[in-house]
Length: 391
Image (cartoon, rainbow, N blue to C red; front, side):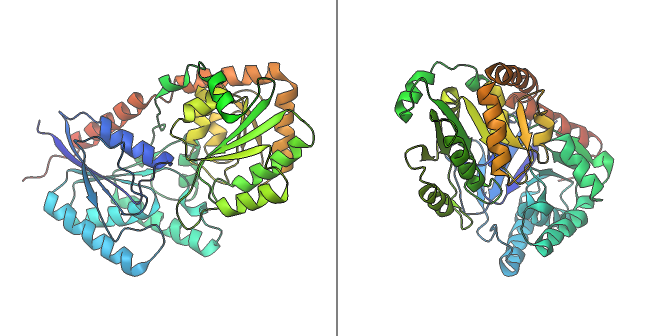
């Protein structure tokens, strides 16, 4: 059989994003003997440093994150022309904006098959009820335009079906894989703690993510203040950034200053060595308001570090509070977050048991090679069910 010609479309490709990492890994690792792979994305937050040389990159200049009707119409037209010209066999879209525009353009251009990955719950992403309704309507309207909808957790599938988006037979859960081998060793623990100025007797509590509304970093800062009042030996670091307009970095810095945490909490910025930071950690906090599943949750579990996380979306599938991975608390509740962290700090035996159970569960499910193999099987299955278009 000839190679299938596949295009992946995503709105942005930042260096710190679970959806971007998932997309990069997929296009990089799909079998070159079976697929010709292209990647289309907007010009904003475009990190191509980890993109394999064989992947053809196509920048769609009008594809932007904010809802912008004029730009969105231009982007849909650009995608339509691209799909007509290149005659793709499969178009695979990611996230909300590229998911909507890409599926509509693929349908109009006569692309034989479209696949969409919902990396999170699109219709809870905004503080505006009207915006969330708009995202829901767009996903509802576009669901019939694709053969399959991939979610990154079973709970996300349930949420979409409960919202009457798509049919049950359209959905398939494929966990978002990572390089599991990177998180096995803790040989860098001492060196990294020295680099961070953390003593061996200190308890290092880590936060990893983008400094935006979804990840709610300010709640972590307030929880840190509550813990410093109780545990003199605790230290905190935050690894992450956000380079777009919604960045909360200034709010985070203001909170750190107002709470007088400057000597106890350090902002590290973007770190490419998250595995190394985790090797130095004693506890990780995850404060998202909504989440597909949470790449940093998976990385923490693979590293064997106990976790305190918000009980949202797919996080509840990975972490079973008090049984696997760590403890769950309500979102936007720094007191509950600090109380759960204190419980694990005061009960190291429980923390170790939860971390071990989480590591075992995650290592069986989140290898990046398994993720790409599952996507490959899905492509082959849906292609067999639809004869190739005549060229």
